[in-house]
Length: 434
Ligand code: S3P
Image 1 (cartoon, rainbow, N blue to C red):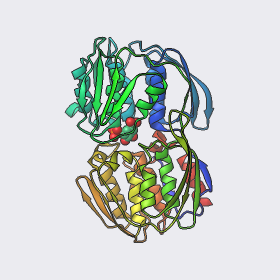
Image 2 (cartoon, rainbow, N blue to C red):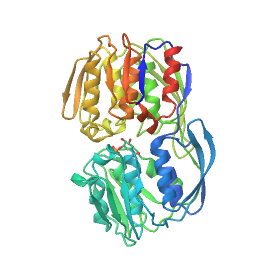
Image 3 (cartoon, rainbow, N blue to C red):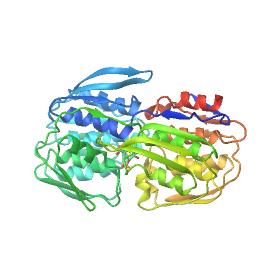
Image 4 (cartoon, rainbow, N blue to C red):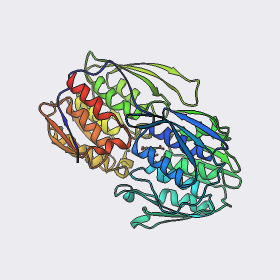
């Protein structure tokens, strides 16, 4: 198992780019596969999670060619869409660590007239799947979570006569919303999903871009059956959730100016910018709205940070950034309260407990609640040994904390960063060596 050995930062590079957005890369491969022709995807994220989606679509009979690779894997793909008609795989599809792969693909498989098995690693096999089993079953597919408590392995017996539903999401989850919408384009009539709080809208945007009719009215997102996405080339911007690690490091270093280029700036994902500004950082944005996704350059000017409250409808917008925002809170003067974030307990690890434990090891006073925590910031962090629990965002968040700590921080078990950010280790090395 690999570790990060982190020392104080020497210099944050003045300008950087981050790899492609994970959520958009998954959707690009799935929707291109569903489409009626050839789609070139550029800016694809060559991470283990997104490669699990590529492998899954290939197992379902989709031809996917690699047009270009970088040091970490494919970044430009040519997907030959099958107009929504897939072939039954011979073996179980392995979704690895990727919840997005397992949940969104279930929405596609629910409408296929065959049976499929989906398996995942130990972490994915503990994550809740009842939340997709219920709506897809209401639509007419047969899904069984053969693990304990409706968890993976999943068996899906699809149906070519799915019915549209009107469904109120019990949790604000973009994955569940997307699963239902993906099934909805192959279901009879109209499918409506009501979300309790706004979640990332990449699926809706990509549908629109590929001429799939969708409608947003208040909390309701609707689509209609009998639609095949129109093949078009797709561009994936850089992942703001990966940029978040460097944004926090820069924001907490007075005098630093860090420019991040070509990063996705979808308003349903930009909550971190508002929070860092509230904490005292200064941020300029140049946004290009011409594509399916907003994308642009952000410039972060670091300053002395102060504590804040992160709660309510803001949570889904920063759901993946909370571990690193907790690190920002530890570096800020005063108290930060994180509330309404119980979803973090069912991510790749229990992120509330992992963050609270890691911060305490580094000398930060933290009180953990069922749905969040209170962090007393402003004490000097001390280097410590922190376990990532195999969770990429925990590993990277504590690598950033280590850049500010006295002495060495050892983050254990960090291969997991490859699920979302191949190249993080190289960037970290550069920041430590100056
Ligand atoms: C994702 C949505 C979020 C996020 C995950 C990716 C997506 O999960 O945590 O990393 O691509 O839709 P939930 O929507 O389940 O909260």
